[in-house]
Amino acid sequence: MIKKTKSLGRPFGISFVLAVFFMTAVLAGAVNGKDKSDEAMFLDLVRHMDQNAREIEQKAENLDEYIRTPVVNSWEAHSAEWALVVSKLEEMAELVSDLRAIEGMNDWQKQLAKRINSRVAAMADQADDAVNILEKEREKIKLQHRDYTVRVAALHVYADTIDRLADYGKTRCELERLEK
Image 1: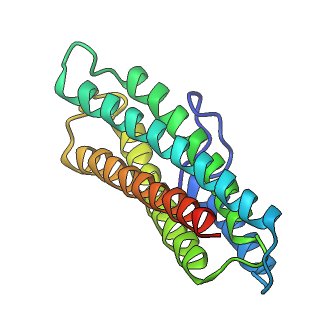
Image 2 (image 1 turned 180 degrees about the vertical axis):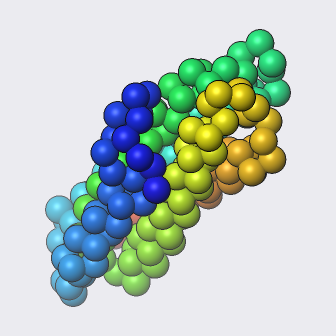
């Protein structure tokens, strides 16, 4: 778990924060009956999820570039990118919580929320591990550490998957709107 650091300034680990949001989402539950405000809220949350996933994808690409470019491969550069990733992950956890709390989601929306939830949780675990490695490697600036590069690559893959799931959700909502 991430400990409070000078660079990130977060007293709790990413996994802890996300766990709290996911638990509230589970407790909120989903009930039958759907109105237009639920549908609009679902679409709005999916759009925000898509935007955050794309931003995390960009940060993962930046981190990968830092790893491959010795001139930019400093602990500080990585730390700054991870601080932004952690911030986006916290936003995504809130979005997932709000998404899962919507009453009246139909089956495909519940399934989509569940899939996004699992990807956000996996991304948080990867980020947590990567930041821990970054903390250990700070003195050596040995940021081409295999475990670290694997975590950065996984972050990109999960963000891309969430982006694609969100695109599916937006498209499906649009198709349902057109069918009415």
